[in-house]
Amino acid sequence: MAKQLYDSIQDEIKALKEERKAIILAHNYQTGDIQDVADITGDSLRLSQEAAKTDAEVILFSGVHFMAETASILSPEKTVIVPDLEAGCSLADMVSPEAVRQWKEKNPGGVVICYVNTSAAVKAESDYCCTSSNAVQVVRHIPQEKKILFVPDYFLGSYAKAQTGHPNMEIWHGYCPTHMMIQTEDIKKKKAEHQGAECIMHPECGCLTKSMHLADKILSTEGMIRYVSESNAKKFIVGTETGILHRLIKDHPDKEFIPAADLAVCSYMKMNTMEKIVDSLENLRYEVKVPEAIAKKARLPIERMLQIV
Ligand code: SF4
Image (cartoon, rainbow, N blue to C red; front, side):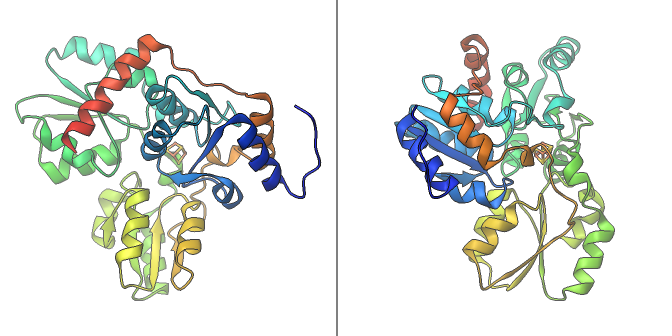
């Protein structure tokens, strides 16, 4: 590929994207410059589903590793690349496929529900997948006499258990360190400082069980984006990774958004940069390809989830 001079890195990325017949996906937690250059911004599953519908030959996924795996599972014929192979997810890493297999051996007939924030290998061992917006629906679908293992997020699992009252639910003790940064005291303080602001919280938040009464709405990232468009409120306290503020502010310049915790920044998500995106498109690296034997098994829990939500 001949080196050319571009006015800006944005122009360079656009040119490379055309040349590669690529689509750029950016998760809601990416930095603003990456979100602005992306074709689609959103949460991980929707991004992979939207990309699968396109005729792009290459998917550049600016997010974390398990998200690119999901894109590979849903678009096995496309080349999926990531700007930084080290951008992983602490939450996804907290459960292994071996651990899930062991649980299934000890609990024959049990049902494994995996949050979408899991590796392809864990999905391949699971019965149902779920997202933060449909975890309650998926748990409600499982008959009460069936034993459930919910992996890996303890707070999302606890929220789904509390909402459904499912009596037979074992929840993995995994957590997202970024969402753990959001503490009840932060929310109380922000609410006192910004009277009248609506408080919207992500169900991964570590303080959720103690702070549920402080939240006006408990929503996934996409749910937050939809809700803000529909609400008449002018001020929002936002309890999730701070990257989402970029899109909220851009879409609603007339509204004010206050992060529940300024420190809620995912260092993995922020490993991706515009320069790495250029390198990734230029050299078609780093490819994430889920082997078809695993992809085939991992597609099942996703398809089962989509049948019930
Ligand atoms: Fe994983 Fe948490 Fe980062 Fe999301 S914010 S990628 S769950 S570590």
